[in-house]
Length: 218
View 1: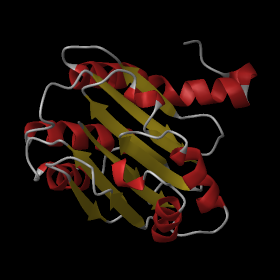
View 2: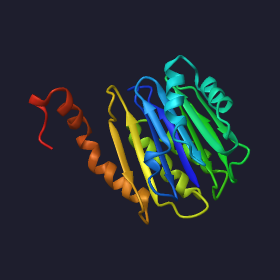
View 3: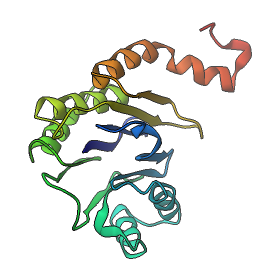
């Protein structure tokens, strides 16, 4: 009961993920990303161990497709897992285990992949990718959020979503953006409000870490 995407911005090199679902705390379990390395989504009967394992495979030089293949081959319960991987070059791959419930689907575009399970419509991933690509001039976080909104407009999941998250990694080991909404009646509306408040502050929080003498008061 989840729809999500991972993507890379070719202008900035930012790598990010956005996800929403009907269960609590999706931001802590499904999306994993590292600057200059790539990103991994693990969902359905979620195994959060696959996120760090996938990032390690990417660090070792594996492509997105090789990373998915290695995760599937080394995961005894892969039939329950839905995976997506993006590598540093923007290549993408995904996996639907045999027991991932319908409607399930995936869609790929340049530097982006969207996946979902227990969807109201198989068109949701395609709508997410289209929403992402249509916002080409916007910052990566904004594009990811618009993609989630497009997925919801296309039917979303089979049921009401209650949690959502937005993650963007850039040059540092810590996230450039890491926003989460849990147990909300309209989590995407809440995530949109958080992002619009956070967006003008994001660079200042980075500056506080790198050059605190010159950092703005936030």
